Amino acid sequence: MRDPDELGRAYRAWPPEEAHPTEAEWEAFATGELAPEQERRLVEHAIRCPSCSVVHRALLQLAREAPRFDPDAPVRGGGRRPALRPVRLFALAAGVVLAVTAVLLVRPGREGKAPVVREVAPAAPQLLRPVGDVTGPPPPFDWTTVPDARGYVVELLDAGGATLWRSPEVEGPPVSVPPGLLFRGGTYHWRVEARLSPAGRPLLSRIATFTVAGGETARSGPG
Amino acid sequence: MASRTEGNGRFEALVQRYARLVRSAVGRVAGPESALVAEDAEQEVFLSLWKALGNERTPGHPASYIYRTAVRETVRLLRRVRREQETAMDAVGERAAMDPDPEARAFSRELGRQIAGSIETLSPDRARAVRAHLAGYDVREVMEMFGWSYHRARNLISRGMADLRKELARRGIHA
Image (cartoon, rainbow over all chains, first blue to last red):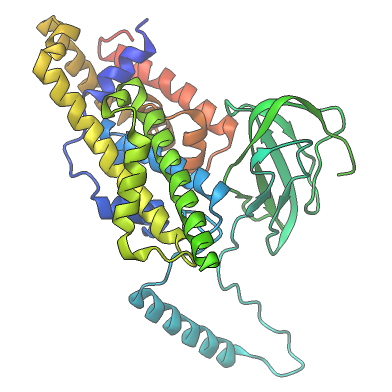
């Protein structure tokens, strides 16, 4: 049986023979401005290329941690959308005109049942707190709600990514962890899964991180 | 005037925190070798950010400029780390010293080629999980990249690695 590290070293010694992402592409990736297909190609390249995988991992960390002290950071997947470029703005305007026209064309009489128009896919929940450094008892988990969500499940992970606790399905925030569960000093991650009704695909939030100062802090209180 | 000074102070504090974050991100992914870029990397990044921002130091809306500049500095710093590592290794012949056996080096490259070929035979998600795992991503990063749950990411890595070993064995490589 070969050492798994040896497999990793050998794999990393065989980089792909293809162009690396440019600085501009990395910047667009970090700010969430790459089109999904471009982002998929960049990720597929990064997991094959040793030098690009370190850049990719560093930018993931930057995007994950910058909002802790800078809520306005235009990170990928963040609450703030990147500025629209003129072409996108034109496409959006054209889309709105078409949508309004379509609604007007199919609108039934006053007695008729209004058609259901799903304009965009719902956004994943945005995690509000706890994030960053926490002193004292961590506050209840709080996040933005999602239209059409039937319920939410909160998952608490330890620093290594192992699940410590999963909540039952709840109607919405806030959610406290059960009495008796202790937060030892250290780093924790959490996320929220929005369950759409009636049987839509679950929407996973990004992962948020908080750090509890040393010692143990008992949580209690209503959920 | 006081509020201007206060605004500049907030701006400087934000740049300082970004500089620490860039250093932390670079140190985390580049490992102990990143010490090669000097102990004062944080101060260097701070100065680079400060200079790069130039006239954009508008305390009202600095965030996107600073974040974008931090991204650029991270990419440049990591490229520099890599260049300096390669230069240092070439200069003192460490590359040969670390792997003195040319046969072993050739075998390692051949193993790399066989691994890359074997991964192509896996199902798409297992292939992604294995590539990311072998490239050094941890489970949390894999979860985040592909939107998988912890258990799914762990299972795909574990089963994908088992499939990879089977395929390598089929090719006569017992890994």
